[in-house]
Image 1 (tube, rainbow, N blue to C red):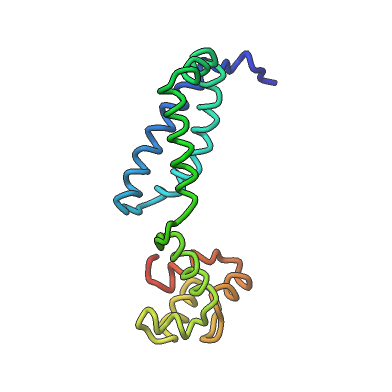
Image 2 (image 1 turned 180 degrees about the vertical axis):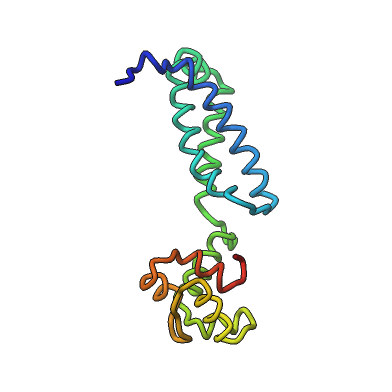
Length: 167
């Protein structure tokens, strides 16, 4: 069994924070400019957990400095500003944001029959049914993506990619 002595905090916490910060900074900038390629959003979301683990270790290593920052006016103001911005970000303030609109659209697409999706993609239902059949997936015009996914075991996103000619 590998013990804590083999992985002292000082060896991994700060390098982990640096690496995760760089990844999150780059992916965050790409997301800001809506450059949605590969696994940018997924990496950003999941590496935030890695960043938190590293940051927790970094705080443990530097608890004295952390406490000193909490004693200073600038330290308290910085933490208060971060907390206030975090709380403010939980509200949409009347704005319709991308994720707010994407989720119901995706849900509607997953529940819609293939015939309706064919109209959205400006294709005949048989075209979509043939595309699915070309991947060994049986469907008819009345099936929804969810129905097909449950029956075939193929992920809904993969099926939507096929329907929208993204694969």
